[in-house]
Image (cartoon, rainbow, N blue to C red; front, side, top):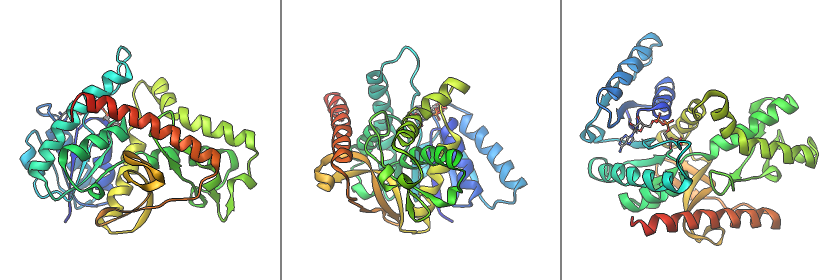
Length: 309
Ligand code: APR
């Protein structure tokens, strides 16, 4: 049975563990710094497994030695932005947490693949890559599936078509500068542009960009069910060696003319993690937006580098 560790037993970590258990992808270790929290969540999840006949064992721990032998480590540890915190505060505080977690992963699960979920996503994934020292195919960031999930939801509710027939793609930062790609969005075999006029597409893209903030405004904290579902799709692609094309934050090394930066791009995920980065054709306008997004990410990486990785 594969072993999947989830670092951080808060909302995103426990939602992720639940989705992994529901799909029987492997046994699970939940880790957190708060004594009792991962152990309590593990007990609750084990009872869930018993009720649903899921043959999965969940262990809660405050000791990183328990992640030994993990095939995948999902990192959800970190702070969420408080009203009195600037984006830079969050960047530096979470960067310290990711460095700490990454050192433990390097020591106790040196052969694992790492999926980072902590925000600001692409920069935290870069920090995990640098700190673990793992090959770049083994360190990747979640979020593309979340952003296109939100986009697909809006298309589904506006056009009344099945989710199964809506395919889409996103590039760049998981954040304000994300580049959704209506030109690479298909309903069945036809482009979205055959079903929606330009103005409606622009409104749908904007609503997607604001979806995360809307959730926080409505319920008071950030999304966790959808991130958990999305991470389980990535875990499944790796564990089952699916070679599935999934928008993933990956290290660009000459791809799209960029280097030394993590950004969301279409990737083939399989047993070796990120097995390929796909370079898709972009219009001049899309390429310009992508380059602007990369600029945002590179300047955030510089802030973190100043703080020494
Ligand atoms: N090691 C392990 N766990 C840690 C550490 C650490 N160094 N620092 C913090 N944690 C734990 C906290 O104790 C808490 O239980 O991380 C957990 C975070 O949980 P929540 O506060 O519920 O936050 P959550 O909503 O799960 O979001 C976590 O995922 O999607 C992103 O933006 C989100 O960056 C945030 C992260």
